[in-house]
Length: 258
Image 1 (cartoon, one colour):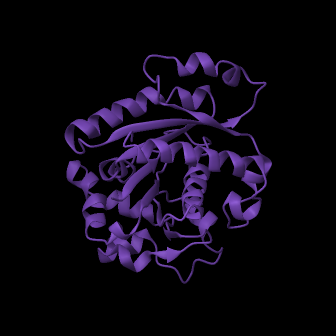
Image 2 (cartoon, helix red, strand yellow):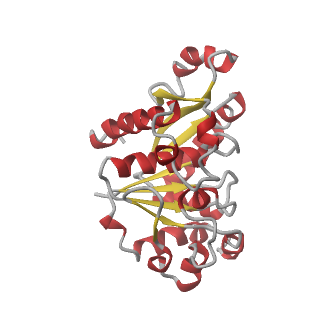
C-alpha cells in the first residue's frame, strides 16, 4: 500500500525541502518507487530534482489546469524517484481554490484520479505558509515529518498540532502526526544541549526521531547541483545521517507505527 508523507513546518529554514528530497532519494536507493511532489511556489524541491532549464516541463499548475497529474510527472535526478514539479504560478492555483473546506479537498480529489498506487511512497514538500494546498497535503497524507532546527521552529509545533487536529477531526481521520526530525544540529548550541529535556516533553514524547541531521555544508551545495546529497557527496555526514533517518523511519512505517 502506498504511504503518503508530508514534510512540513510553518517556519522557513528548517531544512524542510532538504529533508523531503533526501528522504525520497534514500528510499529510491533502497529500491522503493517514490513520487516527490513540490507544493511550494518557490519550487526548491523542483530545483533539487530536475535540470535548471524547466521550459520543457509541465508543472503541478498544469496538472490542476488540465485536471490530470499524469501530464506533469518526470523522472528525477535521483534513482527510482519521479517528481511533480512546481513553479511560481502555483500561487494562482492556490488563490483560485475555494475558500472553504472543498478547496482544501481539491488536491486530494485530483490525486485520486491519478495512478499513484504504482509508487511505494509519495513524499509531499509543503510550503511553509498555511495555504489551501499545504492544508490539502494533510488531507491527502497518512503521516507527517516535521523538521525542527531551532527554538523558533520548535515553537511552531503547537501551531502544527492545532492544524493537524482540525484536519484529523474533520477531513482525514487516518492522519497520524508522525515524527519530529532535528536538523542543522550543532552540539555547541543551547537548543542541541537541551534536546534530552525537549524529547521528554509530554506533548511530543516518543515523536522525536533518534537520528539528528548535522549542520553540513555539502547539504547546501546540492540544490545548485540539481542533486540529492547521495549523488552530490555520498560519503558526507549529511548523506550518512539522511540514510540513517530513512532507515529509522522505515522501521516505524513498515511496523505500522506510522
